[in-house]
Image (cartoon, rainbow over all chains, first blue to last red; front, side):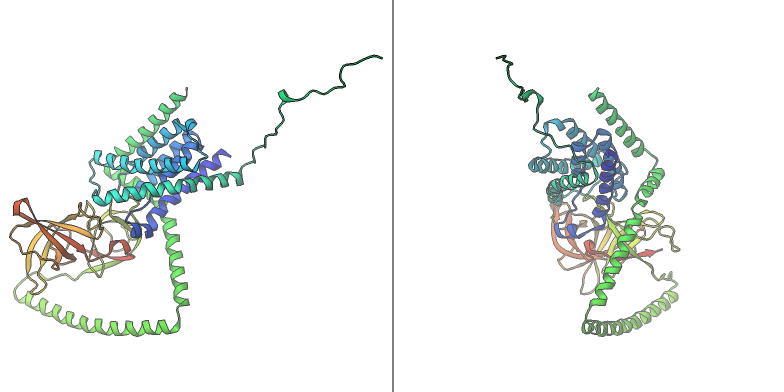
Length: 188
Length: 274
């Protein structure tokens, strides 16, 4: 069922990019649009294989750039670098903890736009940077952070619905078994 | 072994990105349009759903509200018809005088209505996507002017088959020459360049820069396109001056301009065909 999880992550990434472009309420309200891809990359890095992380970041980045004025492909590397680092350190991260999910979402959502803007400047583009960019950065980081635990919850529910239930462990341990027999044989 | 897998994956992703980023401009543009084309069914579906919701909301509106709205629209229609008659008379007079003076005749504006289907998901660009492209009979092309009834929206920056991207006023790719008009006698006060404002948190403000030092700029004056540069026609309203400050020891003036169009709430725009 691993492919189903990968497919679900890709579908969510596709819909997230569409929603970011179509729904303008948040931008009108807060003056900034929240990017959901970094949060998705956090989930993919902690829960799936490296090839899935590469697929999600590559396709997600291309989809994002195709609806944006960014040069096509510029968002891929920032997403992938974040995903790679988290995947490398995954054994040290308590992925079940909401606090850990929040902090990882916050860091990823803050680092990805920063790296993207730096890549854009490096590529000779002239992105719109002003004092309002700081506010937008804050909104993006906090929005991504709040969305990350929601995403974990959603995919955990999804996996529970579509995967076999894990076999529950019994408390039986052979090494602690009390051997019972009839006791020493005594002839009377 | 594990580290090798990381290096290999990183290498593959880097290779793909470098290949795509180094594609020739035309091929990159086509690839971008093809990838973006995947979203078209979703945009279409979302638009249809929005229309259905609007229709349902209209059918639920009480009869009294609708009749009041009809009455207001009739009044507005009457006023607009009267204004149109005056404008047509002025237009004919203008054409006669131009003919008498052997001046080039003005070509009336040809407009194409387009629906806004999306905005740039990135916060560092101010662009929007409209549902008109090169396949339309009118033939949308780059650098065509985009306006609303309130004023200037921007220019077409990318053209696809079924959709186009508009770089809005305030985007780094939409800088242009503008002139300041005195509201009382409609005389031109000064000229300058409109560009994004780096010093404000307000997204409805842009800067008018490189205005000559002695110019009499005042808050409330209208800013219009000057027609210089060949992209925008002369006389399209951009906004109004909010405040003025001196720059470079008085050599230049800078003004903040409040845009006439609310760019965050656009539903439909007009593309000015050449």
